[in-house]
Image (cartoon, rainbow, N blue to C red; front, side):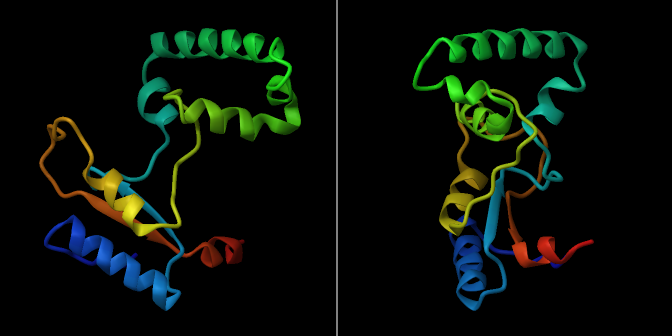
Length: 138
């Protein structure tokens, strides 16, 4: 893993945009701190047994509701589980998915957008990923 430092988010976005233009990286993820990328399910639900039961109850309620909506019923089918969780994730539901963007500016937004800074000291970060590396991995 290579680490590049920038003075601010704008400079970091410009650096990532340059990497994208060069073809070095094609996916980007912004975070408020240098935490290892992890899903909201890992961060919010798995460590807390009480949260797990609430998660299960909400998922069951939502899935029952979806099956009663003609335009959305397909989301309850096994072959559309990824689509179901993509919808849930964008409404704040914890999932195993981790968001990446193909646009460095969007990653920059998520690296800096907060109502209050995290309690932990540190730097915001933009992870840059080359999806060809993932496809080439065994």
